[in-house]
Image (cartoon, rainbow, N blue to C red; front, side, top):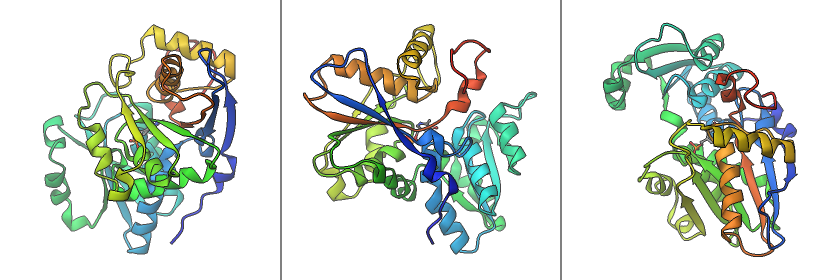
Length: 301
Ligand SMILES: *Cc1c(COP(=O)(O)O)cnc(C)c1O
């Protein structure tokens, strides 16, 4: 079964300019954030084959895991509602007195939340076992999976052969794996890690690839996390505002701002060959900016 999604036609390609641009490199960004306000960016691609499979196999409920601020949890809740499934979210940590925006939204899409302690959360199989009579279709934390990568491969349908480079942000690496699978032989895929000290990220990403994909041109780059996952020092916020003024491109504090900052820096350091044509992936996440005080960013998200 092929799941289609009405928002797909809204995706567009925007030309952007970096202040450090040299050597006639051309840079564009694929605005996947435009696909849907909640099943934002890459999440639709990572979820669609799971949802199709769950429906085809007669499941009524999808269950998945995440933290209180997880884009994946909200996107899963919304996608399940959209395609007629029920959803369960296993949330790390005790139930908070004040729910995050993400969790409030997830509940509004009908997701049933179950809180587990940080310690128990580490043992996913034990949790799945606890609910084995419920017959849930399980999706890994962050949507990390071969099927997620297979769905993310379709992002490449917007990237024609004129591009030499594809660059994306990495959380679990599932989207990057999909881009490597879908990339043409002459295209290099670069993943910018937004995690601090994620030494296994490249291996985790590679575990989603087949032997033939492992021979492709790709690289995982570390060092652009700005202090760690979701950390957003003033230096990053200032850069996001400047970049918005230059390009009218809104970015999110967790993933895409760090992606764009990294590309600017890598360009300056000569990472891209002369005359490269680079496609960045705007993987969404803009709703995460809502956690900032009003006025921090010069653009609305
Ligand atoms: C979830 C997310 C990512 C990370 O994708 P992975 O496939 O886990 O690497 C990147 N960007 C945004 C905006 C996201 O919400």
